[in-house]
Figure 1 (cartoon, rainbow, N blue to C red):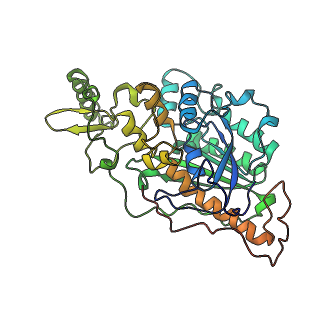
Figure 2 (figure 1 turned 180 degrees about the vertical axis):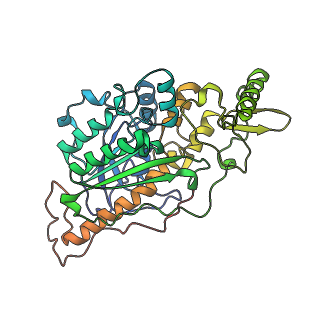
Figure 3 (figure 1 turned 30 degrees about the vertical axis):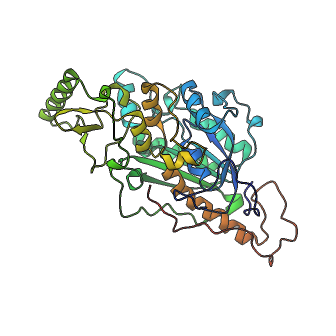
Length: 392
């Protein structure tokens, strides 16, 4: 549970370090990683001192990557088949619940196929309500969710009103903001982040705020490999098709087309369909057709970089253990870990604020105060470092 940082102990498996290798915060908390994908939330929260105590992810290929990155601990599959009683008590419920029912591309595709979207999508649209069930039963002090930007406007705003209303009915104070990852990775990637604080723990006005973005943005050259297999270069046939397709839509006044970029640029949003033709992000090559990103470059573009990998014992970067197609799909569906960390800093500051106002170093839930702690007892915690580096 949430508490002040303990005294000097052996290094944990998931050390709370920043990109420079220095400790970021002194608060230790427990979180669950639901709809975990390949662990973007886990990486981001671990860097703040969090410890993952439960993971749920249904996709076997994503499980394969998750295990390779974080170890052979249990990964629970379909969240509907998990008994709430089997989920440990935790301080933060983290979940990037499926976005396809709400994304612009997903809604467009489902409409074209005559399929339901949003909450009406039986396979994925109702998974948010499973989060509600778990939060109702476990009462985590903090709920931390992520989804596509379109969630807010989907169904003329009704979807967002339902989500916010459900969390408020559970007595959470809700904050939400669309954050663009371009401030931390060289990719335009807007996502909505939703943070709820249990009113029974934090009161009516927890002092939470979303991060102020840095003034500089990283560039694509920071993720590109020096030597790339020629197989990632587009064939003449595919390159000709993409150019003709773009020209056809340009003539109609549409914005469809490929995204051609160089080392000093930033990119469009990497999507789960990148494996099909790579058209949203193509890299210029002198005297040759453009090429796709390699899976390693796609990983780095999402912030699954060598610094993050080193925290989990991977000295040569996170191993890519699946074929290119599922790898692209996994990265395109992921949350950017650095954005999780930056939003998470605000959560950690509220946790520190709570410890201060209780005056006794008491944990948020489930335990009694440390011996000798009281209103006048010295604090054993470490302040969150608001000035920690925010660049990659």
